[in-house]
Image (cartoon, rainbow, N blue to C red; front, top):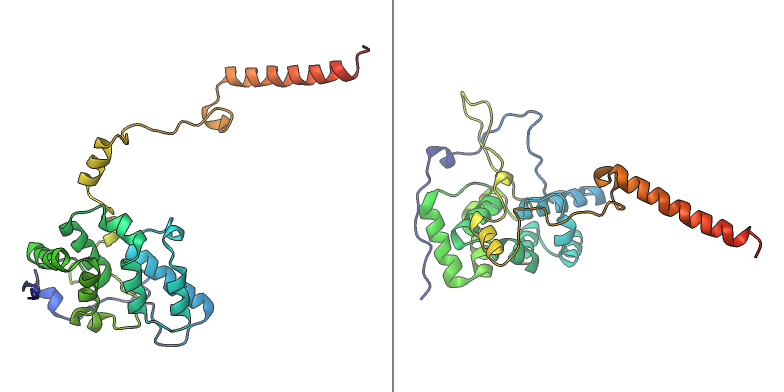
Length: 241
């Protein structure tokens, strides 16, 4: 017997109305394949999808799914299918799913897929039951096939953080990127396994980064070594035997 998703109520009336945003320099770029895109525009869409799902900018190259990218470029799959492939990929499982409990993972997925924060503990509990009973793939399918996702993004738009700028409020919602990829309990487990993150584990040698770590004594030692080598070379080639 399939367990239905438990019902939950929105935490505020603001989520019941259409998104309202004021056009300014901070307006979000919406990436969509509704029209034919040039190669550079498709690159931007793919990059936006990685940034939305993995929430990182510097290490996206480690998460790339080139086969999915090729399918998207040739229009064999939709943007929604591309998002589905990214979330069910092994890299996402290792870097996000394995590092969090079900409640935190559900919150991260709702933020990155539906573009909003969870409606409190009731929604996290409802989706956590789906994740625990059906597994990661069917949980992702339930989010991507939901009426809310289809109404907000459809098949062709990369998910983004939906927000509202309300009267008497200077800024919109804070970006979800401020939320760390995993919680403090995962870091505690790593420390228990012997990984020491309280001290700097890497100390460069003075000859690798002389400007940062070398002392005057080190420079004198290097000078003496160079002088000795030059003298030996000169003595063996110039002085008579």
